[in-house]
Length: 296
Image (cartoon, rainbow, N blue to C red):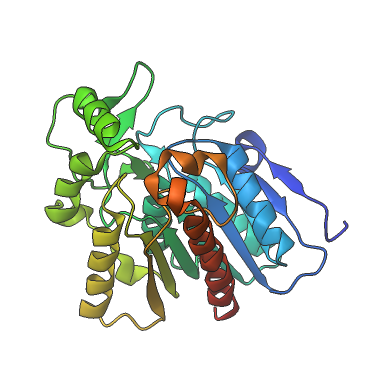
């Protein structure tokens, strides 16, 4: 097999849906990254991100966990087992250290999975993260709150913090978004970060390796800046033995992806007068993420 050949995987035969991107010039031997994005559910975004890391010499597996063949269609009881199977496959292929890179809802997944898979996961980069496991939701007819957690593991529901609502406040979200001229669900998620269910707080201290948190002060989608600070506080309280860092940027929005992307225009931190500074911030995060990988 050529070192640049990409491998595709599907749930029925491999236990997960993904595509492996191998660099021609591997600058991080023995290491591999699994990357996935958020509630957009777009596998193509994960593939674009994987190509970006591949172009910098890092073997990267783009992972889908919703909305692809044989995967859940909603953000309700999504099996973390998919990620477990993906990490195990990379170890089988000879990668001694496997890290996770997740954005938004994917950052919630990355931190949760890292805490549950200490033998398979050796580092986590969480971009625009959440500090608690959140209640699930469905998008079949608009947006509706699901009767349970976003995640499950080995058939068991992962404890979650409920929204405290019977119905998704779509009207309020639309009104706030129109008024702010950007997509925002900040008011919905702030109580979850401020007053989480104790059992639902992600046990980041169980992650078996370094942790990198990346946020923007202009993230109005949900309170990722506050969530990151709470994660750092928890790591300090538990005397976390590995390296950890919170990179907080003044510009850039919720979709803090280290590449040029049209979707970022939906957030003020990446458009108009902030467009260039937002892109610079996101690209700086790429440099520092690769530096983080080199230290595993």
